[in-house]
Amino acid sequence: MDSEGGSLPTQRAEFAHLTSLTYDRVAQGYDDLWSPHVVGPNARLTAGLGLRRGDRVADLACGTGVDTLEMARLVDPGEMVAVDYSEGMLAAARDRMEEAGYPVSLGHARAEDFIARTLPDSFDAVSLRFALAYIDWHEVLPHTARLLRSGGRVGVLTSVKRSVPQLYALFDRFRSSFDPVARLYKHCGKDIGETWRLFRRLRETFAHGRFIESVPAEADQVAQRLAAGGLVGADIWTETVRLWFGSGREAVAWARGTGYSTHPSLESLGPHAIRFVEDLFAAGLEGFREEAGIPLDLVIGGVVARKP
Image (cartoon, rainbow, N blue to C red):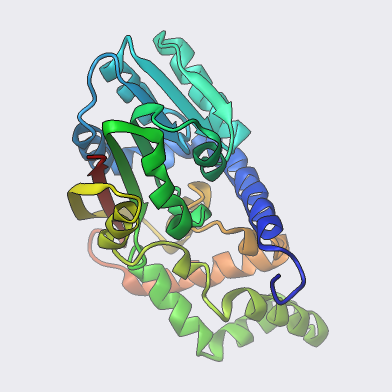
């Protein structure tokens, strides 16, 4: 039981539900805002999986199916199974597959549930991309090995803790500064009661910084957890992708519009508090401005591991 009396399975189920709602919301613009920036890391992971015609592949947390489709082309006439917990993402993936004419088995499921319920030795390859922030990856990653046939491969892509350092630098600054309180007072129309109410909610949400701890520190951590399941690391790398924005407001809109900085704990604050947080970070990001604009650095870890 946790400190508030709720069981961990219940907490995780609620977390997954809120996350799915977030990605339902961003699904329509996801391919424009996110997918073009991670083409390189995704292509490297797909190549590292060494897919062959006739392979059976599972794409967990498939999103809108951009990389599902590429893998389906490589294994055709093999079988592609894709799952996601967001109905909006699955709908986009379904449209993409139907338009391209590739049959893919699509399922509505959490990645960890699919891993737990699937028969052993079912797949030649498993792909898990940008989902570790939303699952208990310490526990789940070793179990991916049971899905694989001998010689099978698992590929994982994830942001690591030092990704988007500009946002986290602001997070640390704001937690130890009086300036956000003054801004919050103004945001609340100088209403002391409303300011105190929102301040308490923001402090409860952000004081511990637990949402930052939800992803691995480095790609090596991912490899270690896969190794705990008997998999052998074949390729482990880290890559930085720099994004440029014309303003802090644009950068915040990107972070929210892709779901990258959207966490269930943030969503629970309510629209008034969220607007304050967005305004605060948009202004803060202006301090990182360079000649080319305002940068955000995605730091992405990739691992491909094999089953002996």
